Length: 257
Length: 285
Image (tube, rainbow over all chains, first blue to last red):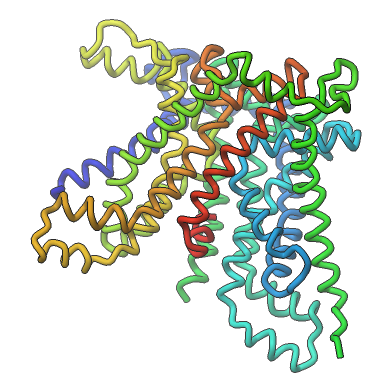
């Protein structure tokens, strides 16, 4: 392949990846309800979003859910990574394999298995079921993110700390957490975006009292393409992009000292 | 003398076991067990053993939906591979300083909401959408194409959504490819095509397999892409599970479908597992 066709080809693929997103963003500022023709710049779709108190309430639900789920998942996921790396215990290999299986499991399979668990335990669907489901979705991702960093640590540090009389807990909060902070932080952000964007699991385990943004967007999108949806999607995209780029940078900075 | 386990160690191991036990092992077991129970209109599930759920899968044309899903996922995987391979090859061989930036631009859509991106595709493909407007204006077509709500639309949506999953593992493999092997092959008289088929493809096979698995698995069960882009008539396995659970209230049948999907997936994951090194799996996530 010559140089020109290479450039042309890569550019085409990037256009394919970004054009749809760009169109949603551009039309969220278009001053026309149905027309594809550019009718001038406007913020009115954003304004009507911000006057929709029901929608704002749903956005708030999503934010709270995402923050709590990401935090719990980060704690459990980090503990899992540390336990898998440092200790020998019964069933360690099984759990390690389970983490990878969970990441590759289709969301719909995970969704119905959690729905079965809730109905078996007779937990009514609502905030708690969503929170636990989102946490369950995120834990393996945090574990893998943290685990891949922890394997790069020099184990001599732990031996030195133990020789100096540090307990396991001291090692955990004085050595492991500070050294792994970038990985833990990116695990949190990853979980947060997963929770914020998750449709399939939420679709199965949410109740009528607690609606969240991805489900709201899903129901709006099913009814057709409206300018308000463009605005809402644009905001969601910007929010996720911000989280992703922040987490990406935090990993990058650590890798190149 | 046996060393006493520290409190922290006992605590963390218990948390890990408890969490994965309750939210992974028990739900998986429940799914498996329920698929052998009978449907009950009042309590959803009656605890009588039966194989009917699995037999029903063979009777009611579900096989054709399963085959349709596999065909769609297969075509999606092949198209992603055809588009993704030269692309991954080009960016993996580009200059170092541009490379990480080029890669970042592939990762960005990978982490944004796939629902929103599906919606974007919908906006392009609809009868009065961008694609038709451009084609009409260019004089290529006289009448708007009816792409939305067709099989093609579902396929386009799947390819668009999953392309980064193909590019990333391919990139990781191609980047490690030793340039000297290619030069050696050419020195020994191999032409461009022979080098590619006999050297490049075998060496990047783990990436091809990883990418294919990562595209194939999710495309089987994407359930909102068929709903949004395919309309009601292009249902896939994911929609079948959803229908059994949320509309037909036949949970045992829904779980049986889910078990079949899981077994299929399990087979693919095993293929992937034996073809990947631990390092690659970690890079992936």
